[in-house]
Length: 349
Ligand SMILES: Nc1ncnc2c1ncn2[C@@H]1O[C@H](COP(=O)(O)OP(=O)(O)OP(=O)(O)O)[C@@H](O)[C@H]1O
Ligand SMILES: [Mg+2]
Image (cartoon, rainbow, N blue to C red; front, side):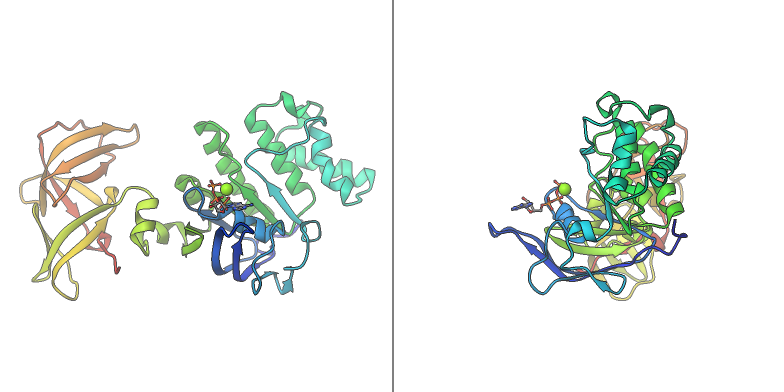
């Protein structure tokens, strides 16, 4: 098995995809994916995620002029069976007439492994996925989470250069999804396989991706680490797609941002009216007396690990604030807010 960091680098050069019916599913895209890393393609339904993954896999050819490279090898003309990629889909796509063991062994048989080599690898996979006791079960007799483990085992068994996962957890309940999400993250990094992972779930993208490529209408609109995408979104589309973002209208004057509820010292070039963004967890609740900003609690939502408040009076519209404080807030209560200048974001568009 390859060591971490030794995975195959994937490079897309000018890859677009137009279907015969004229649908332009992917705009011209140039993108580099580091060997051994996990890149997550994140975006709303229909934005072209699956299509881009299929171009990487060799299930779709890019439009003329597009090239796909695995390391320095141009694989554009290679069909999927010669690219050595493993794929895991949302719908498992296991063979229902085979048991767990036979499903995992399938690719090995196709690749011409010896019976001993095959048996050894199947054992390894069963152990890695902790499904040894299920080896002789029919896949129709498994839970969703168990099926997804078998699908992963089958894809990884053949030691692919590249692992492609298309919404592999969508069919599972929230708790199991979260557990498998962590397992997949650990697994991918321990294997050192280059992985491309498609999801429309931002939590999943943050947890699994070393890098996230946010897509909108066929185009990759931003690529960055989860933190960069979350705190430095390049556009309002990205800001709004990744979690809740406050957008307020304020005036920059004399080194401070003036809002209806107060002013925040902010060393910024320029002056005048502008739109400013900040995340709900970047506004800290402080005593109202002497606070930078003041507002009134309009609604509160207890979310277990945190409380979300809708606060009026701070800005020209309702502001969302999140706190891990345990205390209960009251509708109509006046609170103070403090926002560090570094958490304020000005969008240039
Ligand atoms: N074989 C096809 N022929 C024509 N149009 C297609 C084909 N496959 C996909 N499309 C269209 O291309 C666009 C992108 O589809 P794609 O399946 O890549 O989206 P997606 O981001 O994976 O969406 P979802 O999150 O719903 O799975 C959509 O408008 C879709 O209708
Ligand atoms: Mg899709």
